[in-house]
Length: 137
Image 1 (cartoon, rainbow, N blue to C red):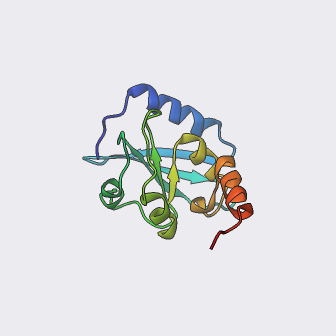
Image 2: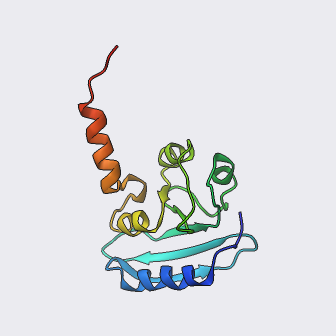
């Protein structure tokens, strides 16, 4: 975990927050080892914290090492566009009611009261495919 994120990612992220229709304001929270923002939303949506992870390959270890401020109702965003994830951490974060994904998913999730319930169009399509796939046994 850490702060190894290119400065242009912060500018891009903050510009997107300024443009988002559900964001009233935001602040970067000072931590020694991680990048965390507090986001105040409008329309009765709860405030959330978002952790910008600098991991190249987000793992279960990264999830277990998340900042202590991140809890139910918050979000973990994979900040580096080239980064990957896909282990059990995704399911575990949803079980813990913590949103998880890259910036596109995060921006979509900001529209939801329960950010962990947001599904990308890809996830919805995969769910449909799996639902329509006959079980062999």
